[in-house]
Length: 525
Image (cartoon, rainbow, N blue to C red; front, top):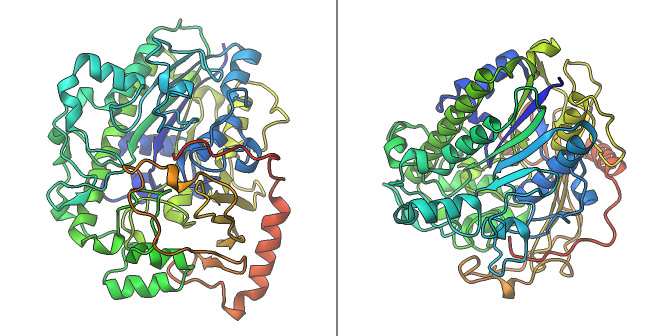
């Protein structure tokens, strides 16, 4: 018998969400125990800061520009390489994905993509190398399995969820997308994902080898956990996050030192369609709203941690613990009040790029606990799964198996951004190395991406008021040792000119060629 792999992912979770990573509010004892007995990667980054590109990197082990899903709205081709298929075909693994997939556009009113219609077809796969897929999103609408389950069993509870991407005020403070959801906890998608994972595990024989991706839709907005749980953290008791600068004057001074779309979004001149509701204007957000969003996020993090505990308990009950590797990570982070902002978007800072990433190797592997400071990425996950399964890392994977001890010699990790909307046309390339993060803004384009005129009004009711174009000379540079909040942009500081040039050259020396031709942006998200 070989080693099993439980791959746990969340959606839009910050590095500091966990107690083991410095989190002070949410209680995350399950994740903390995984870190204390396993390997905690202190500088793990994604290869893109939104869902579809990041998730496509995790399943393929490839850079964004190689697999081609450069933005949300770009569908990963069904015949793309899949680590699940590789484990299934080459090592006989039973494979399943329970929860959020999002390799294909979610706003799919015409049912063009299989993910969004498989539940309606009474299908659970196989698809993309997974023997079984039971899918969920952030709200119980659409054609996903969780949505169909709620519609069939608890239709009266669907209205209790907050509408996604609405920015509708709610909660106690009128915070965007906050709602105290009357849904019972056992019907909320966090517990549903855990329950479906347990049901799948219970369908397997004790001697089976399995790769299970358990993918929680939370703590991604909307922030609407079950109301019976939501008051476990009182937003009135919370301090403002450390990354929240304070007064509007201080926020605007910090943002004015960054490329233009930072301040323009804060003040309402730029519609950040790619990171949140376009009607959201950050400068209108109150400090109490920041507190309430944070409280709801911390509650969702606690519910995820407890759901993980349920699944791990079942792994132990089935006698699999000693030969099961457990991974815990996310696709991208959340601004969550940093810089006076919320949600995500074309903003390459630690709040969005730096990830929680924990690997608890199977106890039978006798791998010692460690903390790794060298940079690693999401594209290193799939090669690690191959190594666990005793398979060679295939040539189509571009990552390397994760190190298990310091001294790996790893120097850099790269993150990219390409706009999904032609009218925005931003292209960011970032490198983290030696305690610095450098972001190059490539020349803006208008010939690639989805036409904003075709975006449903519910998703983009407000076009950008000002046309922002970058000429290729703009950028950001941060010394994270001296400025961990990334408030001081050193891009134009003459004292850092040589370092900037060196990091830029290193970035482009290590970027693979772009996929040619590019995959089209086929939907708005």
